[in-house]
Amino acid sequence: ILRVFDNVHTLDEEELAAWRIEQQMGRTGRFGPGVFILADGTPLERRPKMQVADILRLPLTELVMHCAKNKIDPYTLEFSASETPKRQDLNDAVRQLVGYGFVEKTAIGTLEMTKDGLSIEGLSASYRGAGAYCEAVELNMLAEALPLIAMIEAGDIRHDNRERIGTYLNNRLYLQSDYLDRLQVIYHLMKIDYKDPSGRKLIHECEEMNANMKKCREFLKILSSLETFAQMPADFSFFRDLEKFKGNTFEFQKDAELQEKTSLFRRIILRAFSMDVF
Image 1 (cartoon, rainbow, N blue to C red):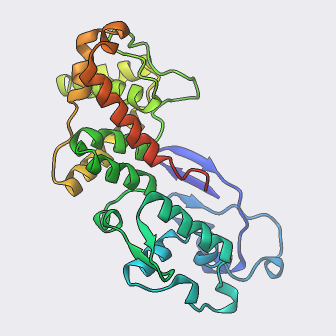
Image 2 (spheres, helix red, strand yellow):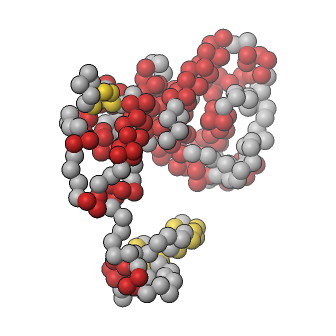
Image 3 (cartoon, rainbow, N blue to C red):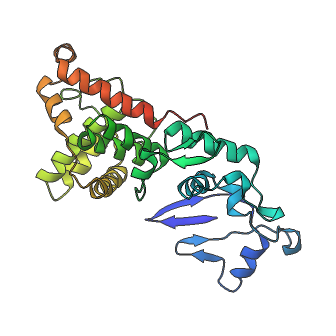
């Protein structure tokens, strides 16, 4: 499947079902805006007749959350023979949500939503980001953690796989956390963007710091969504306070308040990635 979005071409190989070819017949292989099907020579009758049911190919966490909210035992649900999910997949979804603290098992073995599970309803974030959100609320530092949660959701802002990003060492500190290091870079780029609306200096700085400007823009969109949900603006004061050290790690380590704040940020990151074994 050839996908073309924002002048970026990607070519992915996947099994092409017969129903998909029949549905797009007469459209010159166009499946959607910017998406083109490049089919091989496999005869139509030898292709699978139907796509795999969503319940068999997608995580079952949403199903378990819905059941817990409505006090339904997910193990008693009945499906057609072709759509019955594997019990192990259901067990994994339950274990993951219990681990994140969004659902809990009652004394009689049923599931119900926790306070955290109810609080994230309507939050446009992965369960990883939602876990970080709940931990930040518990630590009473949500405003300061919103940029971190947005960074977790946006992913890596580097252009390539070089371990470090940027040459902005005079104002950066090694915080022993990739996410906090990248947020410090983001904070620096945001200030440049504000001072130079033309964007020319921002493009230059992104190149110098090996930062993906498109990813940085995505970060800002996610952050705006989180601010709307939380009904509060993000607080970048932690990264503003770092600048006074000008890269002096020794002086930074003597600041007890910032050291404590760094530890709290790490707790939020640990909550976000606590269930990554799944």
